[in-house]
Length: 192
Image 1 (cartoon, rainbow, N blue to C red):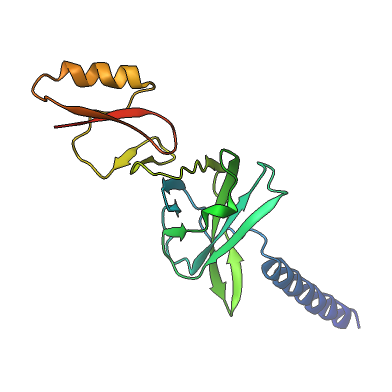
Image 2 (cartoon, rainbow, N blue to C red; image 1 turned 180 degrees about the horizontal axis):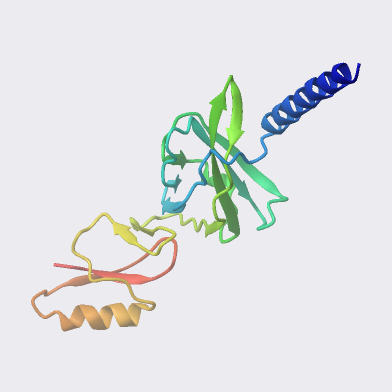
């Protein structure tokens, strides 16, 4: 009789443990075998914003959250990327208020028996969208790297005066045109 109770106890323990594991999986609690997303970057362009990150090995997709606050209580966007791609292009810039700071985090997921298992969220990054009606064709990403439609620029300076001074020092060029970044407000000069 004692052996019967021991066996019943063991069976019940296994059943309870299995159910608990299923509940944890269903509700998307972080699972240790899904790696954490790293190297999240935000590349801002005049007509879109691109969210990028380092791929997680064997991930089936990613979940992106964008909020208005760093505590992630005021959710603005919840995006699911269904393939193991390391970027998502968002073109609806009207979603964002000009000059306001937004916060983003990303996590990977894998699928087991059709159920998603989520990894830990990435480090939180923030960004601002600064829209201008007349884009100059100059923009920068979250790391401060500048991009432009022209290759013949001198670097980026905090003021137009600094950029102009640098342009005048380069005597092999006879003309220059000052331009300002659409997003961070820094200045450069096109030389010819």
